[in-house]
Image (tube, rainbow, N blue to C red; front, side):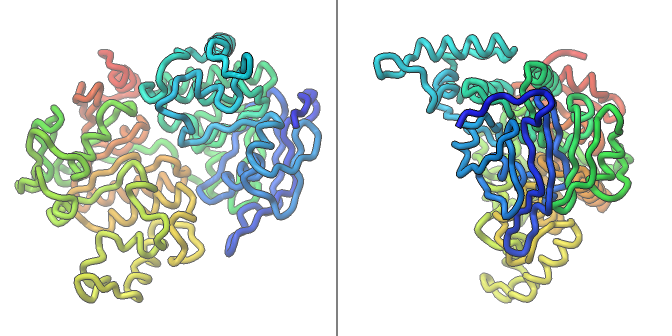
Length: 500
């Protein structure tokens, strides 16, 4: 069902009065969305506002209860993503959907392979990828194995997949979440070029400054309804944030420094890294994904064996302790992968919030027997404290939006009141209002005398929260800064392995 391109006057995408209900939730309530060819349109809103549901309806993974969808002026009823792809839509998801063991060319042409004499024409596939890469400014090696590529190049592969299928409507979900500032700039140049060629780009993101830089128009959702339609040339970050949250939000706040006390975490020679974190201090680790920071944190949390070196919490050697032993020694941990590592999606919100507390009173009446009323009460308290949007404490955690699952995870670990908190990407995929709340909770946790080792790919987050900043590059600590010496340019150069 390939649809012809629309004229500049006809919307490439027109969604009218879209309504979608789930048990206990009205996800979309009469939502209208219109995007024209050649336009970069930002879809914004807090977690749970209905953005993902609306894009699921557009891409055919969900069917609306009411409303219509038109592509290039023609009403469509997609039975699934295959219909959407055939109609000229393409989507780059937050979690890339690539085969690591295949080459770039094999990934790009998968299920749309050029053929010769009934067989896949690999030469034509490589030639097609080179032509698309050159045409759109997306340099890749067609013969490279995807599993060996950095994350920024993998994203180019995802975009090339869409262009190979001649997508005219491109949906990108949080596309810069794992990119360096320079990679984000290059991505924006590509998106602007595609828009000039008549493509329609829908950008789902929480990053206000990015939207103002690259977007043309904005639709803001709150509680499933449209609260604002804006032109970026005529608006401000504060106006967008207020439309998203319904209140004034203090942007770009840098929190006052902490008052460091005794050493809580001491690391020497672990994966070639030495560092300390003191009580009442946040030490931030900045680094592009793939430079060893995740592996370091997993080793400290007990998820990877420590082959050499020593790890101490408050002077106690935990180098070879189990994860449970580390928790008993005073460690809490917010992992980067909230779904696969941090939570049990099939278990209830209440049970997930109890994890780590579940062997101790008041949640447990014995070594293994949970006290149901106490678990539910504990959950209700944390749901309110951290603003977790859920129909009920008994709702499966997997039914939550990504941002609300993140709030659940951060809230659970802060509730431990452990002397040391390891936290990776605490606000990834979280809206501006929740970012502010999580930042305030982390600072309050520090000011209560806890030590925090923070890993974030967001320079603004590192600079807003950290008392000291370490930069990891190619598996080692390549630079260390006091907070007052770490401006964005200095950190950006260090992230790329260059001297300021």
